Structure formats: C-alpha cells, structure tokens
Image 1: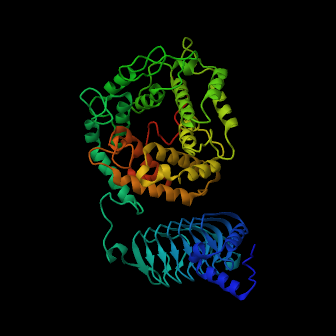
Image 2: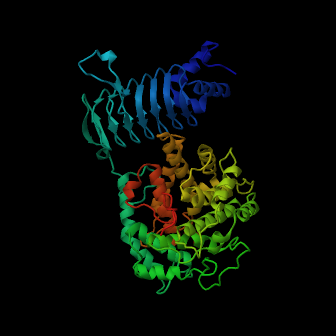
Image 3: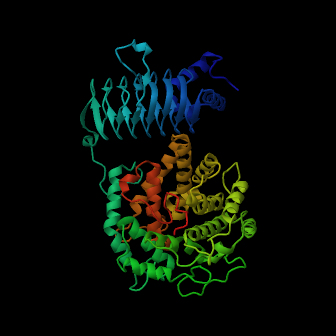
Amino acid sequence: MIDYRRPVDRDQQHVTRRFDYLPWTFAEDSSEPLRAAQQERQRAIPGDVEIGERCYVAESAAVFPARLRLGADSYIAAHAYVTDDVTTGTHCTLNPFTTVRGKVVLGDGVRIGAYAALLGFNHSMAPDRPVYQQPHTSLGIIVGDDVWIGSHVTIVDGVTIGDHCVIGAGAVVTKDLPAWTVAAGNPARALRDRRDAGPRPSRVLSIAGTRIPGDVLSRFAATARDQAAEILARSFDGERYTDRPSAAPTIRAHCDAVEIADLLLGAAPEQFTAAEHVERLAATQDPATGLVPELGQEPPTTDADGFIGDGAPLYHMLCVGYALDVLGARFPHLIRGARQMTAQQLVTRLEALPWRDKAWEAGAWIDSWATAAHWNLRHPHDSTTGPGVEPGTVEALFGWLLTRTDPWTGLWGSPSPETGRLQQVNGYYRLTRGSFAQFGLPVPHPTRVIDTVLDHARDPRYFSEDRLNACNVLDVAHPLWLCSRQISGSTGEAGYRSAEIRAWAEQHLTTALPRWHHGQGFGFALGPASSESEPGLQGTEMWLTIIWLLADLLGRSDALGYRPRGIHRPEPAKQTPET
C-alpha cells in the first residue's frame, strides 16, 4: 500500500498536494492505493468521528475534534484547522486554510471559502482576571442548507445563518442572518434577498429536486386541510366509506376517514356525528372473539388460543382500535386471543411464524397481537372478567423478541435473493410499531438498524422515483425516526448517520409533495398510472403520516401544523388500565 503521507517521488508529491488543494477531484482521479491511504487518514483522526462516503480529509489539515460528523461527499482541504464539536451535512466544503472551531453545525451544501473562520466559542471578559485565565463559553454556530461563505469571512459564536444565504468575502458576521440573505461588510449587513437576483422559486407544489422550506410545508398542509372535507365526501357512498369512488366499502376505509379528519380537521368526518361514528365502528366487533370481520363477512374462525393467523381482521385490530381511540372511545369487548393466550402459547406462535421467507407477515402478526393486548390492558376489568392479559404473556413477547434479534442487522427474519431486505425491513416496522414503539420501550441495536435500513433504502427495485409506494417508504421512515430519536434521547445529541438520513428524507419529501391530487389526496403508489396510484383514503392517510415523519427527521414538522394521533402516533400509547 502506498502511503501518500510520505511521497516517494516528485510525481507522487505533486499528486498528493493536488488532492489536498483540489479535493473535489479525488473521487474520480485517485488510484486504489491512494483511496486506501485516505481511509487510513480518516481512521487516524482522534476523537468521536463518523465520516460519510466519498469524503476527503487533507493530510495537511489539522483535524483534532472531540466529536466530528462529516456528511457524505464532503471534504476538508489543505491546512484547514478543525477542533471541538463539528457536524456537517452532505456536500459541504471546508476549503484551504479555513478554521472551524467550537460547536458548529452545518447543513447540506455549505461552501466555506479559503481562510474563513467559524468560531463557535468565546472567552469570558470579566475584569477580575486576565483573559487567558477566563473560562470559555460556547453558544455554537448553526449554518443552514445551501449557504456560500466567501473567503476570509469570520462568523462569531452564537450566530445562526439561515438557508440559502450568501456571505461576501471578508465579512464579519456578528448577528443572525435570515434565509436567502446576501450579506457583506464589517460588521456584516444584509444587502438584498438572494431571490431578487433571478427568478423566484415556484410557489406551487411542483418542487421535486429542491430543498423543502417550512413555508412550502405550511402551504401544503393548508391545502390538505382546505380539501379534506371534499376528499372524505368523495369516498362516501351515502351509507359507508370506500377507499375511492370505484371501490367497495370496507372497515379500513371508514377508519382511514376518521384518521384523516382527526389529523387535518381535529374533528370527526362530517358524514356522521362523533357518537354515530363510534356506534358504527364499535358495532363491527364480534362480542365472542373480540375480532372485527370485514363488512358483510362472518367472524373468523379462531385457533384454540382464541386468536387468528392471518386475514383482514388482523389489521382491524389496529385501524378500528385507533379510530375509536381518536374519537375518545374504545372497543366494547375484550379480545379473547389476547385475554386467554398464555406465555407458552404465545412463544409457540412466535416460533412458528414465517421468519425465513415472510418476515412481513410475522411482523404484522406481532403488531396485531400486541395491539390487541394493548387494548385489553386499557379495558376496564373486574373480578368477573379478570385482567385483560394473562400475567407474564406481554413480558414473554418482549423477552422472545430481545433474544431473537440479529445483532448484526438489528432486525428479525432473513433477506432473500429475490426481494433483498424488503420483507425484513417492512416486517421490522410492523413488529416494532405494535410492540416497542406502542409500549414505549427502546428497540435493541438502534445503530445497526439504521445501517441496515439505509442499505435497503438504496434498493432501486423499491426506491426509484417511479416505483415508490406508501408501505415501502413508511417502513423505512419510521425505523429511521424511531432509532434516531432513541439514540439522541439516550445521548442528549443527534448524530448517527444523521446527514444521510436527512438526505434520504429530503429526497422523498420532495418526491411526495408534488404527487398530491387536488380534491382527491394521495394514491398509495406514486409511480405510473395504475390502480395503486389512484388517489384514495388509504394512500392519503399513509402519505400524510409519511410526510410528517420525513419533515420531523428534518426538524421541520412544526410547519405542517398537524401530528399523528392514531395508528402512526409518534408517542407511546397509554398502557395503564383505565378505571
């Protein structure tokens, strides 16, 4: 292996110096030995360091962080000086002789010119002692996305630079700059709005390929709210709800209508009063089994333990239960399969699930049974009915799951040559939604999960723009959201592969928003015209949730003005029995 830190000849020295000063050429022009040496250079950086793909760190740069997160496709050029706690998004550049110290957070696409200084710390200046004896303070510097910081610019501690700003060479920035500001001078002052230099961004929802600012999210949510009543009326046949006008009435369609109305309007769908919705949904539950058959069908035949193995009633545990919940009600009857099942019976079920080739079905079953247990635990009980779940059964569920997790992937089940990790990842979402997330317990191996899910999210069979559907995107977005929040909650800081997660969320948010059909909502699939791409209640309910999750991964969900409260609620559901 060639050590490019110790050039062996003049040509080699020239190549090394060229990459240090022109690091953007490294990815295409370097040799395999030089790429290996660059990996060694990155591994040798001290401190808590995570560096994304296709990054470059110049050998001549002084990089001594306590913590460094360098997003993919970013570089630190010759003689840069980087210390303390620095986080960058993707496609960020620290050009030659830049200084970045203290606590500094950069968004995506930040360009920092040569000799610039971002100083995210300061000295105290009390008159009772010399400055060199004073403690440091650090408010930190935050720089948004798509920002150009010119050469010899200085940004002092405590400053926030908004998205899309341009700061002229030699400026000294001592105060916050709002988004789109062009600033220069000492001290820096706003000269104009960058958008005045050319055509302003489109004010419609056709924004794919760009960063989604908060005002676009706000306008999207306002449009959805304005059209919610029309969308619900479109899928009501005068007696029951259908997913879309061409479809037959279903239990799920009624539940999707309730969730959409609650999400966007904070009320029940106007076709019935809230009490009438509760009455209709509660009447769908079979008193003997506690299960909910499809409209017009007989209650399903249960197994000896009182539960079932497949079919629509499994999902009805979720959608009917949460539709009643957002309406302020509950199932009128206990679910027998959750009430009677012993810990041993549950373990037998878990062992028999199709983990090897149908991990989604396995995860969906656990989601349904755990949700049934959740509803039973919340149901009032007395000496006649007894507790809603046999003692030790819920504990057996989590014990089995924790001891069967693959520590290398953080998932359950196996990938396959035919479908890759699709079954695994989709099953992970369903499994954890009903168990760990619903009961408020931490998932095992969250960093491994993020690694595995991000790897799956690059599979073009499911995530090319013309092949997206709500299930596949939701089943990636929720695990990334769940694991990221768990990691940041336990350490007090965001971090693990956050730049890649944000880039993925941004990409799919920009793809989804323009696919809204006015007065109709979203189709389940976003690709070419098909029955799955026809707008309906299921697609609308799911994509509204997905958009919230993607926006929240980007720190912008507040702009939407809504937050899921039903099946996809971000908070754990209440578990203590009500009296």
